Length: 69
Image (cartoon, rainbow, N blue to C red; front, side, top):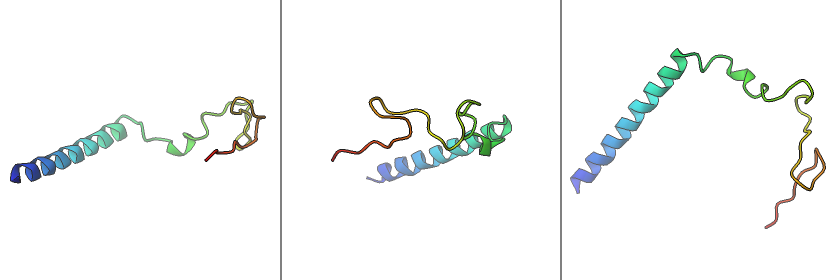
């Protein structure tokens, strides 16, 4: 039973170390620069920010779809 607790603690520690190393690598290689522009970069000049121009199939652009429950 105690081996299970040691395994869980080791797995959590290994995942934490991996997450910290991944964050360090991303920061060192410039992946975290200009994070505030990331949401705006998907728009091109023809699609203004904040105005939806695409639609779910069968709906008009800019309309919301109703969720069926």
